[in-house]
Every structure is written in structure tokens, then in C-alpha cells.
Image 1 (tube, rainbow, N blue to C red):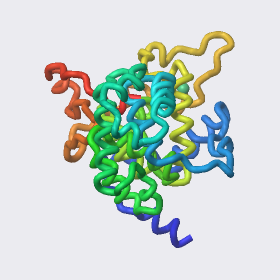
Image 2 (image 1 turned 120 degrees about the vertical axis):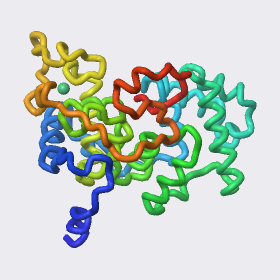
Image 3 (image 1 turned 90 degrees about the vertical axis):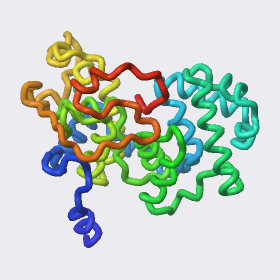
Length: 295
Ligand SMILES: [Zn+2]
């Protein structure tokens, strides 16, 4: 009881202190509606399942940058098959590691980043392992992970949520898009800003389920898909199609708001996206593609 009161009065430190959404009730309602369609994820987890290896989880998430789940899973599986230990990945020629993960794209950059992480762990800890993060204070674990090149907030949030089983609300592209459509974050919020805001407001006990449900839903629902145009999003489902359970919770696009003063700008690790208002961003020259948390 005391713990829940303490958690509920935690001071807001995100970028949109007066935004007011989402409320805990709204988070609960969206979770319930999506769970009716997709099933509650927490009930699908086997209670006796071993927690994921933290380093596996970090590398798996790194490899998922700028590619699909299927190809990044194939890249990870090939890497593990070719190099049975992380120490073998660390000491292998860069080109061999890149060849193993080639299917996921940006292979040389990703291979270099993975090897840099492994070398740092070997130098600082004497072993290629991140299991010492278990039991560490979440803020400390986050800071440690963010210190690695190419590791941004989304990657860290995924490792904390899935491997360390901490209440973190990771924001991937699906969560980001649906949150904007629901009016939970300003339409011009960057993904990291959306994470900084939503991680504060989504109740801890809903973070795992709501994250997994929004990702599943974003992949399956044409009205919520990132690629969907406003027209497609507003269209009624085709005959036999399942209606989007969030349709009546989304304000009309004309009522969605932007925010131009969203706190200090900061870039971390894998976030290469412009964080300025869209009209400023448009004027910027295109940058060279680098891996980022885009999924
Ligand atoms: Zn939908």
C-alpha cells in the first residue's frame, strides 16, 4: 500500500508536464480492449521460464535496428550458431562477424558495435556478460547500457523490460505511432520524447502488457499501421475484417496537437532522428543512414 502511494506521487520528469494524457484509466482501457482482440501477453508467459540472458537480449535488440523482426532473428540465430560463445564473437575478425549477421543489413556497423561492447565488458569486468545488471538499480543499469555506442533509449528499455523484467515502457515505432494517434503524446514528439513521457505516465503494472499489445496491434491493424495514410486509417474494415478496437478512442486528426517546447533536446546512442519541429527538420539535408532503433 505504502509502496503504491509512493509510486503514484513520483514527480514527473518527462518533456510534457502539462500534457495530461494518458491517464491510468485510459492506459487500462486500451490494454483491456487490445487484450480482448490479441489475448493478454502476461498470461502467455510460462511461469517457469528462465529470464533471458541480458547480453543476448542487448545484442538481439541491437541487431533489430533498421530491419524486420524476422530478419534480425535470423541474423541473431546465425551469429549464435557460428560463434557459440560471446568471447568467440569478441575475438573473431570483424568481417566474419559481419558475414554472420549480413541478412539484417548494416552488417559492418552492427558487428563493430557488438564487438566494441564485448571488448569493453572483457576489459572492465573480465568476462563477456551483463548478468551483473540484475539487482542493480534501474537508473544505474540504464546509465550503464546507454554508455555503449549504438545503444539508445529504445534498446535499453527493451533490455530492462524483457531481460531484467523491470517496469519499463519501451517505445518502438508501433507504440510511437499509436500513441500519437491516441493523443497520448504531441504529434511532433520524437520517439525518445514519447518514451520519456509515457514511461512516466503508464502505470508500472501495465507496462509489459500494454507494450506487447501495442506492438502486436500495430503490426496487424491496417487502421493503426505506421504506413497507413490518414484515409486508410479512417476507412471502415473490409467485409470480414476486424474493426480496430481503438477507433473510437482516437480524436479526429484535426484535434491532435503539437508541442514546440518539449524540454531540452538530447540525442542518445541510436537516435539519429531530427528532434526539431517538422518544418525545421525538412530543411535539413539528408544524413547518411546509420543504425537506429527503428522497429
Ligand atoms: Zn487499430
